Image (cartoon, rainbow, N blue to C red; front, side):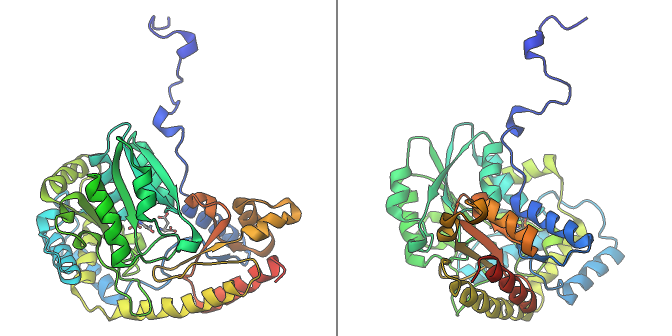
Length: 407
Ligand code: PMP
Ligand code: GLU
């Protein structure tokens, strides 16, 4: 006998997905990397320049700290927001590098920066709130925002402006529902680094409109040509009261698999995020926390060494991409991505290929090079290449791309 309140028209099957899942896209970056890996496992000579993951091993002293933590029995639950020493180390490292004093109580350690972002959105966003996200944007932002019932408001930027959001465009996008601005500098996917003046003028708009700001600064140490990335909340007095900084060890120390990231924000919000995490996941992996502690407090030469290698690769990739007719790229000041415009190539419609997704698909099929389509980053007509790969692989990948476009 069916339940009287369930008419057959409204009947949901037991495993029908919740409404919030209907629009959820899988991570395009991780999906492309998985495809490239399975092709490689099948014996294909794939050059995977899809995922943003440093190719260097995690530095040895960090691995040894993890081994020691296991041997010392640090294999149990920790406080949900992270071990006190790590929270202290994150606060001290941030204070030293940014000049803005923060305390351990303002830090919540999470399962990667992605989880930190998810926590922040869950803690701050209500149904119907609008979050302003400049495009091109990193693939997970829009999806994580939508999961909360809030609405990502995607603001396109122009290659001519180095894909930077301008204050006029931000001002024009404001509505009574505007709640948050999301910024990522150095940027994934464009590699662009905002200047302090550019960030300051966005901060003025955010303050005037009373927005919260999430500053994704996970690439803050991966900057080139002697640049220094400034931390957003340092730019105006009081800005720290409305800003959450998200960062982590994944990129800086080549620790993507360890899953340690964090948020830094005013203490009451940090407490709420800690409470949320205590129900969601409990603590991030205890051993990984000890590894991250060693990363932050140990020798830092590894960071400079990896950055120097990334800068050489940036030079190589930028020069070779610029030499391909029809390809344009912005000034890559940091991170390890080249985001290049192929719209003149797509406009030719060769072999019926008119979208970035179709172009990437054909490149993978024909030349076995994995890139990620610009459409996944809200910027059709472009393609992202990760240059967190050896020079040899980059050269071979670029040879194949040049052959593919007939250059
Ligand atoms: N933000 C940006 C801009 C990223 O590129 C990444 C890369 N994964 C993340 C957050 C998430 O980092 P994690 O691997 O620490 O979750
Ligand atoms: N952030 C990296 C990228 O954009 C890793 C993959 C992911 O977390 O989506 O490729």
